[in-house]
Amino acid sequence: MPVISNKGIQMPESPIRKLVPYAEDAKKRGVTVFHLNIGQPDIKTPQIALDAVKNNKLKTLSYARSEGSEEYRTKLATYYVKNNIPVNANNIIATTGGSEALLFTIGSITDPGDEIIIPEPFYANYNGFSTASGVKVVPVISKIEDNFALPNIEDFEKLITNKTKAILICNPGNPTGYLYSEEEIEKLKMMVLKHDLFLIADEVYREFTYDGLKHTSVMSLEGLDENAIIIDSVSKRYSMCGARIGCIVSKNKEFINTAIKFAQARLSPPTYALIASEAALDTPQSYFDEVKQEYVERRNTLISELQKIKGIKVANPKGAFYCVAELPVEDSDKFAQWMLEEFNHNNETVMVAPASGFYSTPGEGKNQVRIAYVLNKKDLKRSVEIIAEALKKYTN
Image 1 (tube, one colour):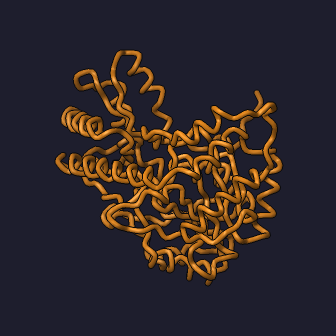
Image 2 (cartoon, helix red, strand yellow; image 1 turned 45 degrees about the vertical axis):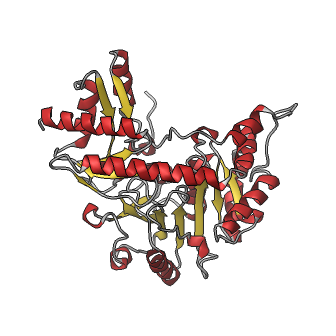
Image 3 (cartoon, rainbow, N blue to C red; image 1 turned 90 degrees about the vertical axis):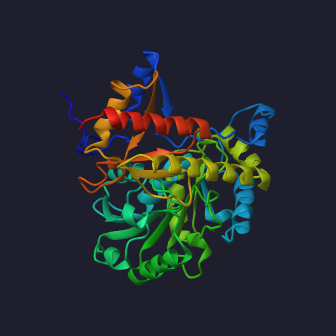
């Protein structure tokens, strides 16, 4: 029998999607499943983006440029300048989602055996993308007791070796919702300059910051032109997850010239999605103000309801639309599967994402879950009620 690669065998399952078959089985049994497992907002996509595709007069659906159309990148650069990120179209490569942006970035700056340091818990696919590239993730643990703040710089520095190529952060964070302060970004800046590393920032949740706090981009700081790389996407900003348009942003010309070769190898990002994404850039600020207010209310509802449950510890997110909760169970993977396979409350149950898949340190996050507050407040309240009932009946 032909042999599967070690890389393929080591490729981790998605903690977000691996329980989907159990959820589908529950639905076939007539059970309603509230999905708190995945960052798919129920917020409407801006109509201007949908109309751009619907009303387009294209006669041939042809390839786009490998780096994305000049019109889109120029318009996108204008958006970044407004957000205190001084770049131009030549600093941007459009990709098929933020996922491809990460793959191109890792492929451009690392060789097999190299290392990337990432504060954990982190977006689960960072593990997958690194495995696909033969790169080792070196975790530095942040703690729920500190609301998942940036670990001490000393904790980073003791992990740096001659194989270290980059520090990777998600800001605001997935799965934690933590928003790094300007002071924390400055500390990272000084460290990457000291050790001549790349600083990669996944900033796809840039618009979603709460409680009067502001987002600080790694490319808004002076002195990082050769070190900073932004990963971005339209998926969350405009509730356009299915468009699959992301981008890489960097002023490092050698890096951009390298990444474009990866872009050329896959030909181009999808043409219709580029058209929709370009149109979405005309979305009025009022759209974001309303969405932001809705997420604040959802967050407050979720956190206050979770805090009513005995034995639950929950971090208070300041951005994105996720939180990590520590449950009074030994194994959240088993608990999450049990809720779908064996439990329902009035014929309803909940799907969450076990948090162990957001760590690379064995044993970490075993009793934690990530909850995405992407449902309306009524459904969020009901979901927490179901979790409370499930915990009453569940035995480890």
